[in-house]
Image (cartoon, rainbow, N blue to C red):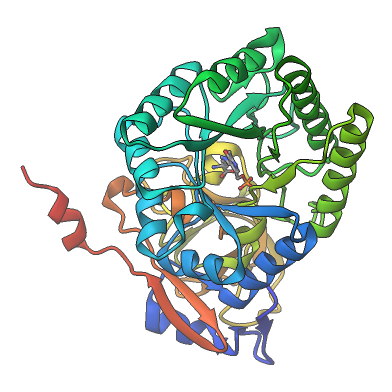
Length: 427
Ligand code: LLP
């Protein structure tokens, strides 16, 4: 992130504050999030797509009330996928018309709250949900704006668990076999629904634009079929999120303006070929906005050298604050940040304090051979899907999120306490 630097003693500073002081004040482990960087990324996406498109930040990557306020101020919309995310968004003042509700199994209660609140969009994920949302909207005397999520049959080159547009998975309605066309037919018949467009999300941590191009082409093809069958041009297309970020120096992410240009071109070209007016485009980046803006700060507890293998460096967190390494084989880098060291690089594995051997934060890393208890380590690019997927495994207390802006650090999500844990335990 832009505000992270190393001073002459090798101590990392964040917005001018040194990590030792941050650790002292906020404890470890903790996530430090660069608010200026977050806002700059929001603006980059907004500017790249321009006034003719909408950028929905995907709240699942990381959501808090401060984040909602930043998004509202920067002119972004918000994609939520649960009642909890919806409640967070509304309680921090995001205008309901800028919220989209997602999910493959939204409850009646979640749908009801969203319709009552007046969310701008519900993304329908199944045939049953088409009817369910229509009934709820009718009962409330409303006409809900909806999109239908389709699966376009693209194999995104990413981990199996985060690829979503191939046929054999739980999301969306397949274009194949005319299923999506049938979903459109049904949605158009229901008074409670105003069908505004088609949605496609192909996966996450994707670098290759080819998958998005195929997705855009197939969605436009469906719009063409809808026009031919019903005489209606649906006015919106959403191409989802999924743009990759650099976790290690091997990754080479696209900039928002490149992504916007590529998607804009393909949609414009396909629509021109089909004689369709160009629909309003929206996208849903989560990771690409928040991922690079935060790092996790840990303190080293024990160092165990396994001769001929590697050195295990244990930190005071682990899979409860970053499950991504264990779950997806995700790669991270790590740095000693509380001092400089001229010691030889040593093959290390940074592990947590949880009771299983898969509790790995960084599988392979070179750390200085003199790394020792009390040193501070930083793992960059932990803004997305780390705090939001944090757990209480082994009754770990989930770490705080500290926002740094203009050289001032403030807690936006506080550290969990044992009291918090025990409050839920009512047996
Ligand atoms: N839109 C929809 C409908 C989604 O399902 C997702 C992510 C996004 C947007 C945002 O995707 P992003 O731009 O953040 O890649 N826990 C996994 C990622 C799961 C993504 C789920 N859906 C991970 O840690 O890699």
